[in-house]
Length: 98
Image (cartoon, rainbow, N blue to C red; front, side, top):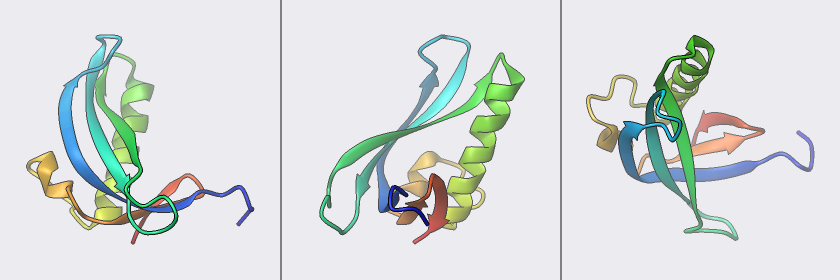
């Protein structure tokens, strides 16, 4: 792993589902906070475009969301709130279970 690799533990604290800024799809917007480490509590957004007029954009968003579900252990959520406060890692740009 390079010295520039991201390696953080995060958890989702809020989530909303709504239109993308461009108006061509729908996105799940997750507010995350860092767990542990020097930046504990730091907030950041993770956005997952789950529906989009461009099928490639949609496929990328759905693959990323599938990785989040695997990383949190919530494989078939009925509501995004089921993903809240489940720790997961971002390592080298990929999601992993914490």
